[in-house]
Image 1 (cartoon, rainbow, N blue to C red):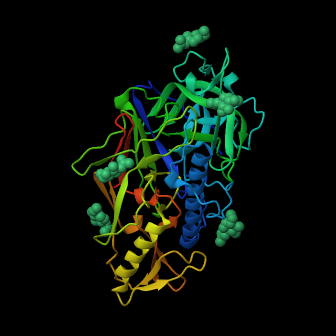
Image 2: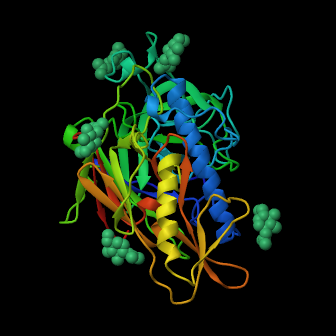
Length: 437
Ligand SMILES: *[C@@H]1O[C@H](CO)[C@@H](O)[C@H](O)[C@H]1NC(C)=O
Ligand SMILES: *[C@@H]1O[C@H](CO)[C@@H](O)[C@H](O)[C@H]1NC(C)=O
Ligand SMILES: *[C@@H]1O[C@H](CO)[C@@H](O)[C@H](O)[C@H]1NC(C)=O
Ligand SMILES: *[C@@H]1O[C@H](CO)[C@@H](O)[C@H](O)[C@H]1NC(C)=O
Ligand SMILES: *[C@@H]1O[C@H](CO)[C@@H](O)[C@H](O)[C@H]1NC(C)=O
């Protein structure tokens, strides 16, 4: 276990930007990597994670009274344990001078970055030493006169935060500032980043003990991207590669002026506006989903199914479509495949509601799906739409990587593969383009 960060060369300021790697849990470089998971086991795990994530995102927004009535979860719809946590993306960041290595969960719904901190009143187990502010020469406390202090509870000497995320897990502590260092193509240091120094933490963030906290990238002034105050630089981007590849590549997260997108295929759609309360709450980026097409046909989506928008998420592996709309989508795929005599529906006994098909060698007529957003269309096909597997008898099969849940629409991680996404918070819009990431 390497607990040390490399020495650093460049100093950058918060008005510029940086790039660093985010690592998916199915990459051998990830602390969450499970080496011997079969395709089908991984698929079932991804189903579970997607459903847990959906319930967490919704139960939290409801708890804080910020929910849109359209995404209110039926109380009994999910039987899954809320406390099961399954982060997908992590990244390593050095905190302080000299840098202490922290391994954080990348979360686009979280309003504040935090890591466990000394003196720990309550810390969950972590492998590397817990960050100790008294050993960092660049550590500072955020005071009442800081521009972000209004989001916290402050006394004359210091400010306190409390954040809760992912089904019951929380962090409580002192709002701090220190230098963050990122290893990327070049070594980069960002000074005076505001983060939570968590001395009272409920976790852990997963079964692994490598994780120390969370990187908050939510649409909130106190998140890491929110701190890039200059409006033009108020943005971040990433491009997720093929996640089930046998040789997975890491993704680059770029923040500030390093986050760019270009080319003639770029499409842009606004984020849905949402009321911003006074509290630090988990809240997601939402898009205005206006329709769905399957195999070239625009579907008749039941009224109200797409209200409340579509959450753009990096915590759910699979996209989730509101259950009534999901029925329509599934029927469209079923009638598409019904025209091929040698393509046969199969049932996964664990997830009978999932759509899987056995197909003969050489079959290539896989359909695509288009999500119609306000002013932009996202075509989803190939491995972004289907899990391609081989069963025990070496027969080829596919399973649709979409789930239906009550009153929820989420654009998940598999459906974001090989697309460059630019979250432009200054202009309240998302730009995206197909790319080979
Ligand atoms: C797979 O991993 C699990 C848990 O780490 C272990 O118990 C099991 O023996 C492994 N199976 C194989 C085939 O390596
Ligand atoms: C806030 O107050 C502290 C202590 O009085 C002072 O050292 C610091 O420079 C002030 N910061 C700002 C941004 O005014
Ligand atoms: C501030 O304190 C109040 C009362 O203890 C609490 O309800 C609120 O969540 C706290 N706010 C923050 C940002 O920690
Ligand atoms: C979503 O987009 C549609 C089509 O452009 C528009 O009519 C509708 O008002 C938008 N909804 C919201 C909530 O902005
Ligand atoms: C998926 O659709 C894109 C167009 O959006 C196309 O360029 C690409 O070749 C398609 N991929 C597959 C596997 O059909």
